[in-house]
Image (cartoon, rainbow, N blue to C red; front, side, top):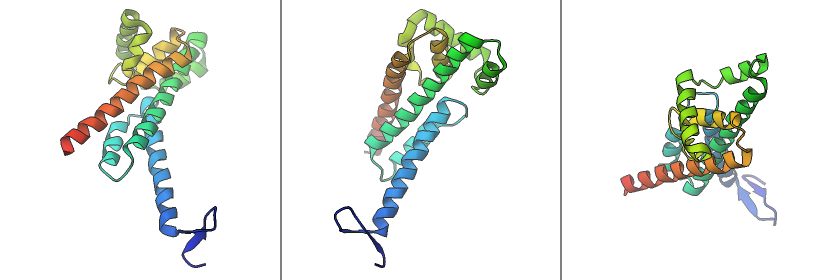
Amino acid sequence: PGGAARGSFGESIGYETQFRGLTLMLVYASLFFTAFLAETVLHLSSELLFITLLNQDYSAAALIFWATLGNTLGACVNWWLGTLLRHNANSARARRWTSRLRLTDKELTRAAEWFARYGKWSLLFAWAPIVGDALTVIAGLARVPLWQLALLAGAGKLARYLSLAGLLAALIL
């Protein structure tokens, strides 16, 4: 039939509804991957895309969820690279992977100082510029269990996205 598809109970689903669903999926996937890559290998700003999407007609809860998940999983990759460094610091494989992190010696040193002072609780600040990515690598080097990294870094990243959404809402109102 022209212009419609059949749903699970036989009702017609218009192409506009299908297009809207596909659009939502692509928007949330792009935010997830931007947040993931911003935490790992690329100089990206997931916050810029997040705020841009918040200004449009997308669910704030869904945007917060996907941005937090992507950024937290990116932190887990950094943690894994830290464990790789710990076990194989001189291997070509470890050097190749860690060279993609874009971390300077100064950032790693500062993160190591934070970690030495505050321990695993410093991971609540894994979202922070300059030291955030390095903190997650240091956590891998320091043998912080992955579940603790994910919980603490994820909580900090969630707080950041919630704060951004709240700030934007306050500015718009």
